[in-house]
Length: 342
Image 1 (cartoon, rainbow, N blue to C red):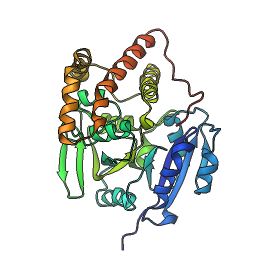
Image 2: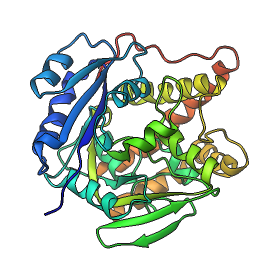
Image 3: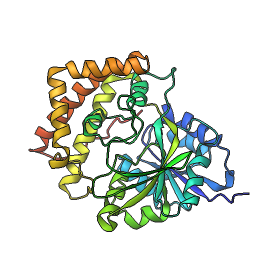
Image 4: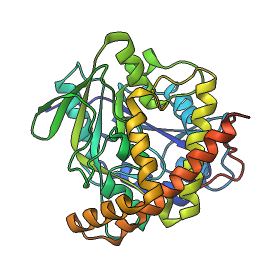
């Protein structure tokens, strides 16, 4: 019988009681030794029932004075005692009882792999249209579709990424390797890392998950990873268009702020490698026709009216990123977490 290792589940929180219980219930139902799972919240000072709820599920609560999700992951990581750390967001739901086992076992077979990640977002008919849209396109940020560096199955392309990489199909999972050609947006929403790998590569007060892999490539020229052929539910924005805009605003403001401090390693800057994709995105938003075509194409592949959020999602993203860039020339700051909540 396989001796399964201890896993630390790291959840950054800030007023997430509305979604957290579904996440915790899905962890509780895992077919994995209960004494081999610890849940650690990096909490940014929740004023709702987040802490009370998490404590009822046996979670440890670690204060996160910097409030952001990336800071919450790091304070939780520093308290982790598991051999592996699973980065689970409060709005994630593990879709099956075998999920954690499926993520860990391939890592035991391949010690060269630094982590594992589901290769898709789980689509559920009962979810909101934004959550279903994100599952269909395999991302929460439609710009990434044009850049090609997404990391989940995209029904528009039939691929889980367009980044050049090595890939070996091992049946229930893919063994992949990335080098100087780039790396997909691997990181949050159900990604599992070796704890030692995270601790060896993190610095400062924040854990930018994708930057950890970029840093590894900068050091060693290559990184090996596992893409498990399962999914994870991400109840993204729950059908609230204003929340979608706010999250896009947060992405650009936080990125520019931390980039200005030299704290980011992943090349999100629109330089030579990303310029073509950015121009395609802007042209599609200006003319609109390509966005409508993509919506129709997606609908033909899997009928769901959620596809028709795609044009609006792209237009909102262009607006928030454009305004954020312009404002960033004058003042760089993180988006305030005052009154933040799910």
